[in-house]
Length: 333
Image (cartoon, rainbow, N blue to C red; front, side, top):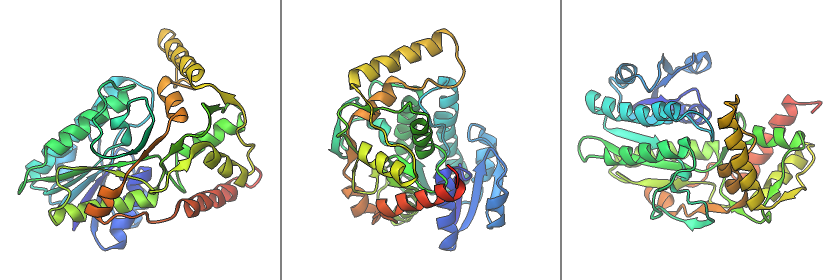
């Protein structure tokens, strides 16, 4: 098939591109930055922003399907920026698919769309969407997922949404590098009782899920539905983090802070950043504090049944590969 991947230069987007190429699809990419490495692999790459309808519409010309991974992630920033990337961008992709006769659309969402500030243990797709978003990212991703799924129309455009949880792996520019940096700086603390269990998703597993979802839509399965994606084996967050830190020679996190105190500190930092218009993002937000203290893992049986999904690599294998790559790039640490 001829498949367009938005956000093709991103961590997940690159993995999706590689998997599509490996199975023989003709792959096109759309993103804001040049991607010479992808072009060397045979990807026909177009520079453009998903917030620009004309760029998206042109990129969708002649496509059989679109995998829409482009988004603005994070816990801090202007609402307008998140809205442009996540809501306007998704609306443009939907409209461009309709205008160009594209019939398949896989939308990358996030489990944060069901965030409720409480423990979620074994939650499934029946969970309601977040009614009171803790930040601009969650608020805009809720809108984007809702509109993407509402765009599903038999015989016109088949759409599904995937919610991969905490993506990690070699090349991860966000999750594990931030954890490691905080631990090395001595400013990381176990929030709460340290017994919370969470889902993680290796990037290759997340990429596989997107390709399987595309095929499922083509076969008439999963249309108009959202799916949680993970390794299917939730980990105890803090022991998992400490095992990785020990493997790469970084001191483990041993200090503790009560969850309410962390939440208060996050709120205070948010207030200070807003009041004084400080640059960057606060070291801690209320959302981050709660995510570090609560359990959040999900039942992926629907993805297994409808998409034929199972993880592409085990969690242990993924962590070991990441550790080896980290040590190779940081020999002196």
